[in-house]
Length: 190
Image (cartoon, rainbow, N blue to C red; front, side, top):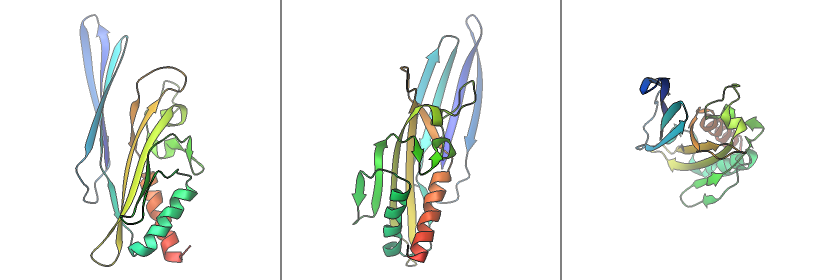
């Protein structure tokens, strides 16, 4: 589950700030480990924005044994063109803790990430340099099946000008896609 809270202070009169707050969250359907929180403040003349971003592992049952799920997971990372820098076949962990994709597979990053958008309504995930940390692991479940855990964290930073990195929230679509692809490959053996 990923929660993104934004508090914006908008300059309305000299010396007076008006505060607004909004929040978005996904329903938690599984048990997840404690979250990590990142707080970023961006200040420009006339307004100030503070962003709080919490990341939890997305945990989902696969319905297949771990020895069938592992090779399928490795294939999924290759198909999505995710460069692998973490690979441990003994603990069933695969991922990359810091890469900068422009797309994942054939999809724009905004399909998977919400990094906000500018005044032209172009998603920052497609416009900015996104640094993505993605780690997926498998755990054996008590019934001979397996559970897939995916941790995703991302930030977006302007490509052409200096600026602070903005935290991005997962839309949950990449985690779901990984689960579906692993299940399909593990069940069909391909």
